[in-house]
Length: 288
Image: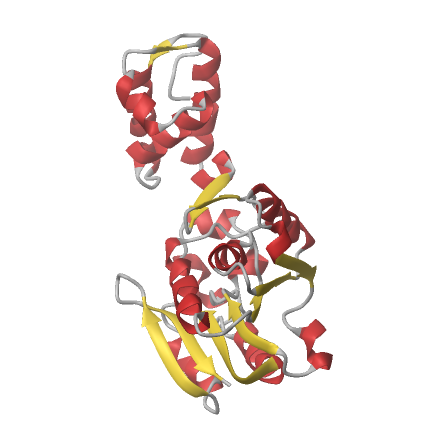
């Protein structure tokens, strides 16, 4: 416990001690996390913390703050503690039922918007929607699009639906439970774009993941078989059946998977890889 029990404490001292506690556990950006957790306890923004460093926290606030710091020090992700994550300017609820949206996934949204801008009222399916981050970002930017989002996890769909309602986007996205694109196969080619951030971590690489990811995020949304390619092997043939001629497939990929996924797309057209800001291949697109 980083603070004395049943004792009030100045705000700036509390942040300093909390950051020191997190440093001993080597958890993330310790100062930023310490500030974020105190913001959560107080219901205030960061500017408030900087404006009132001498503010004396109540014993209750100190106790609540200490409990959250210990959770973070144990490896629990900050976003699961606070219950939210920012993505594409949207504040999304996140729980251990869904992956925490990453900034890198915004590249998939950017690419999708670029490809869809010339299509009037496109039909788009987000496969493995999780928190709904991709589907909701597209719905925000494309009010005339028909957005559908699929996930095999009922718990994940609950989170996605909550986010859609909370953001006022529920009328723009249809959520459905299902295994990849199986529910669309009988209808034939009728979709303009499929976008997906599938499970792509290889089980053989599990030990390379941060403890926050390996021990707290849902394994069914992380791991895609031994090499991380199992879901791609199923998704790509299904996408080939349901996309219209000239339709687009946009998928996030792992750092070592570009070659393997490209091989699965050997019969597709206009293959292109988009790298993230660190130069790591992040999104692969292909045209039917």
